[in-house]
Length: 215
Image 1 (spheres, rainbow, N blue to C red):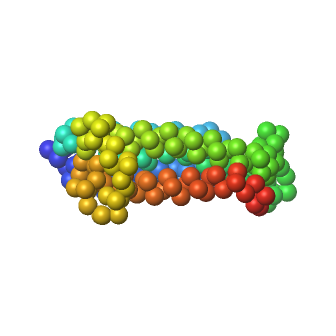
Image 2: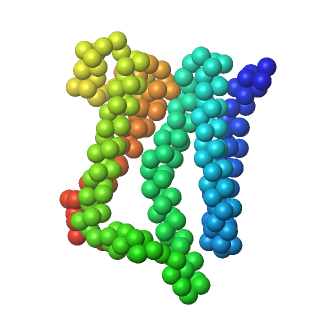
Image 3: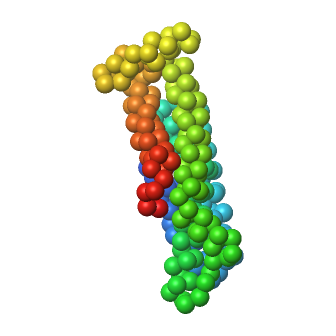
């Protein structure tokens, strides 16, 4: 009965957890930068991590009850993967930015020597280009592995995948039946990921192809 309730309200529960996660990050900033209470800010970060684990548990419970992988599990997985990878880098970047701004408001510097070096390095076009190349290659590996996994559900073996690799007419047809994906959910996720990957790839490598662009 409890699992049935969770399945019926899975999206609502997920949204509530996401809101609480956002609130915990906002409170982290308030306690760390404005109230200077580091112990409380640490608790807020631990709360965020706990909520992230709760999202994973929610996805597992829904799968246990339904015995199928749905859009919900995939969305939760994407959120968790982002939080554990690029989300960490974005958080550190935001942390440095906040300390820089709060320090300017207080008329003092809250940045460490390491932070200063990192901020200075981020203005170096060669460093930025290298960083985006690495992130692009990492995304490429994850993209290939993820697409292979999605395609493997819709095809029986590699020989069935090759025609789809050679002929991409299925990409514009708008029907999963004509694609290498097993169902409509996988199709929409796969196609959207292809578009995001293409945009990210072009954007990332533009820093290498056009190194004189403003950083």
